[in-house]
Image 1: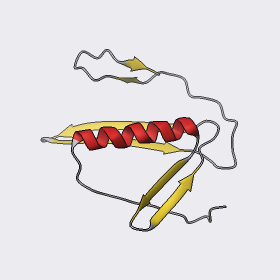
Image 2: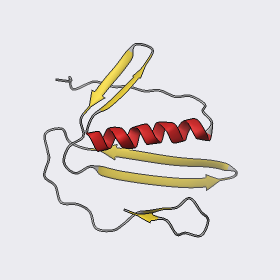
Image 3: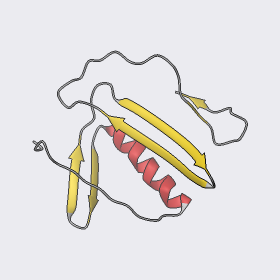
Image 4: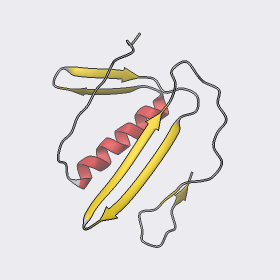
Length: 100
């Protein structure tokens, strides 16, 4: 079992195709219920269960673009009420996307 202070952090410059591969791997790991992050001998294993808080933020300011994805859950809490509303993520500029 993980201690209360396990932490993993990685930062790098990647092209968009590499980012797409990371996001695909992340989606598969969430679907399987087991995420492992590792780099330079450091690693952390996580097992998301129950409902997860999903926070998305996208900004554009003076030519700098930032997209933040944040996922949170409590390891000892599996039953929570889902939030109301649907997120739309689109790959086109038309605003039509996949509703989840």
